[in-house]
View 1 (tube, rainbow, N blue to C red):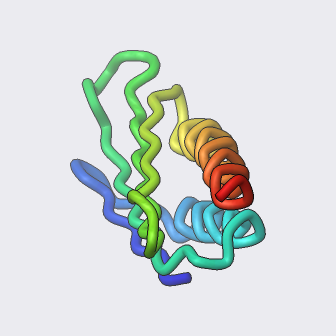
View 2: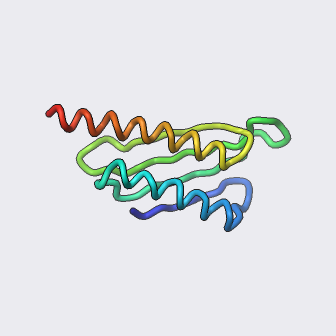
Length: 100
């Protein structure tokens, strides 16, 4: 799976990027068909709490793209919550596939 990371209004550290790579790569265990993941990091409103937004879009052939966007105090937390939401969506998608 190809993972692209884009940061808007700031420069992402190498440590943050490697954290995201590891977290998003784990989604591959829930679905073998994921071709790529696009991660967008944004600082929503500077100088407020809950201002870090992480959006993750998974490109899955033979299915609608899977998307999650979450806001938190840190990018790590936002990515964690977004990945958890994607896991649930991937599990639902797998159940639908089995039902067919």
